[in-house]
Amino acid sequence: MAQGSSGRKPTGPQNKGSTGGNSSKSAASKPPKGKQQSISRKSVAQARTSNTNNRTQLIIGAVAIVVIAAIIIIGIVMNQKATAVQNAGYGASTKSVATEAGGVVTVSNPTAAGTSPKVIDLYEDALCPVCAEFEAQFGQQINQAVDEGKLTVNVHMLTFLDPRSFSQTYSTRAAAAMLCVAQEDGSQAGTYLGFHSALFASGTQPTEGGTSDLSDQQLADLATSKGASDAAAQCITSGQNIAAATAADKSSTATLSTATGGRVGTPTVVQNGKPVDIQPPDWLTTLLAQQ
Amino acid sequence: MAVTQAGSRRVLAWDVVGLVARLGLAAVWLLSGFEKASDPRETIVAVRSYELLPESLVSTVAAMLPYLEISLGVLLVLGFATRLAAVLSAALLLVFIGGVISAAVRGLSIDCGCFGGGGTVAPGATTYTLEILRDIGFLTLAGYLIWRPDTPLSIDRFVRLRAESVAGTAEGESVE
Image (cartoon, rainbow over the protein chains, first blue to last red):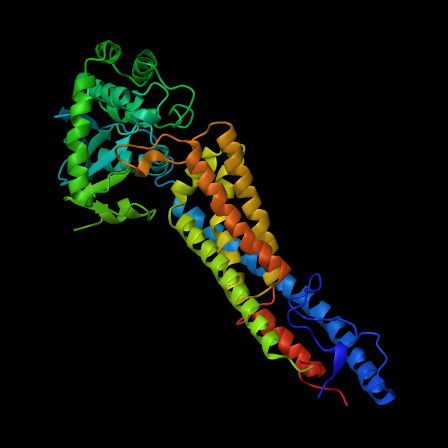
C-alpha cells in the first residue's frame, strides 16, 4: 500500500498547463531506508509521468486548436452558402408595376404572357435592419421573378419600429412615401420596387436608436432619384398618406398575427396564410418551383 | 495513501462542482452558438449594432462567431483540453462584457427590435446590467475550470488516469 506524503493529492491545486495530471514531488520527511527506496523509485516514475504529462498536454492543446479551427472553417463555408446573394447581378426590376389597395401595394408583371405567378405577402418595417439584410440577399431574385411574371408580391409595411427611430415617426413616413410612389407612379415600370429597395440600402436606411433618419424631403428626393414623379414627391412632403400608412399597419399587423399565431416580427413572408421559412438561401427558388 | 472518508466526500463534492461548471458552460456555448448559426442575418445585424468593428470585419466576425462558440462547447462537453477551452471561454466572455459596457456607455441600443412587434422596450440600463451580470456568471464558471480543469466524465481525466496507471503512480498503487 503506497504510503505517506508522496501520494497524489486529488483535491490539490493543479499544475499550470496540466489537464489534471499531477506531478507533485515527494515530501522531504525522513522515512526508513526501505521506504526511502520505494519513495525515490516512485518519484522517478512520477517525474517520468510528469514529462509524459507535459507532452500529452501539449498534444491535447494542439489537437484542440485544430478542432476549433476546423469547426470555424466548416462554419464559415456553411455561412457563405446561407448568406449568398441570390441572382446576384440581375439588378433592378425593369418590368414590375405596382397597384395599391387598402394600404397594401401589389407588385406584379401582368403582361408576362402565359404565367400564373406565385403570390406571397411580404411584411417589413422600413427601419428593420434584418429586413435590409433580407433585401440585400433576395432583392434581385425577387426583381427577376416579378419581371418574369413568376411572382407577385403584396407588400405590407408595418410601423412598429417608429419609437426606435430618431424622429419617432420614420417607419410610418417611409411607409407613407411608398404608398405615394405606388399611387402616383405605380404604372411606371420598376419605379416602386426601385424606391422600395433604395430605402433598405446600406447607408440609406437609418439605424435603430440612431442619431438621425430621413426627413420627408429626403424621402421625396430619394423617390424622384428613382424615377418618381413630382406628384409623388409632393404627396410625400405633404404627408397626405400618413393616416393611410397607420391604418395599413393596423390591418397588416392583424393579418400577420393571425398567420403566425401571434408572433409579429419582420421580415416575414406569408404564402396562402402560412409563414414561409426564409432562413434557407433557396426558399424563393423552392417556392417558385412549386407545382 | 489511504483516502479518508471525509477526503473522498470532499473529492466527490469538487468533482460534482467541476462537472456542473463544465457542462453548464458547454451548454451556454452550444445553445448560443447554434442559435447564432441558425440565423446568420440576425447575427450580422447584432454584431454590427455594437458599432465596434469596421464594416469590412462585421460579416467575417459574424460568420466565425457562432462556430467559435460551438467549438468551445464541443471541447467542454467532451472534457477535452478543458483548461484551454476555459481560458478561451473567459477571453471571449470578457470581449462580450466589454462590448456590452461599451454599448451601454455610448447609449447604443443593441437589441434589434425586429422581432418585438408592438411595444418595443426602450433601451435602458437594466437590460445591459442583466446581460453583464449573466456574462460574469458564465465567466465565473470559466474561471473555476481554469483553476480546476480536472473534472469527471472527461477525456482529460481518462487520459490522466491512463497515464498514471501506465506509470504505476495511480492512487492506491505502490511501486515496490
